[in-house]
Image 1 (cartoon, rainbow, N blue to C red):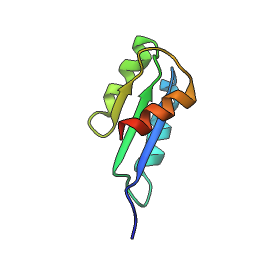
Image 2 (cartoon, one colour):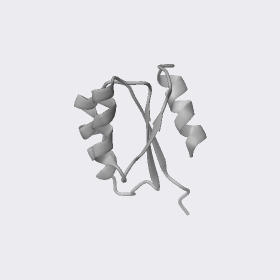
Image 3 (cartoon, helix red, strand yellow):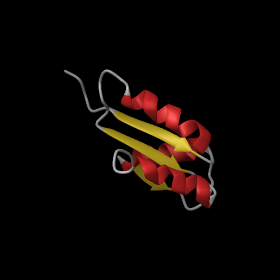
Length: 79
């Protein structure tokens, strides 16, 4: 029996990497039940880039940059 699979991706101004990151997640043998990308207060253009992945991913926006650990924890809380 397999439990629920959640993928949480902290994101801060990394539009140039997110395509490959999400392509890797989408290509897995077992599809995750949810993919949560936590934007850690990126610049506007970098944040808008994430919208192209809706509705396949859920985006959680941090009000200010708190770092990768806080972003990951916010993703866990959003599950």
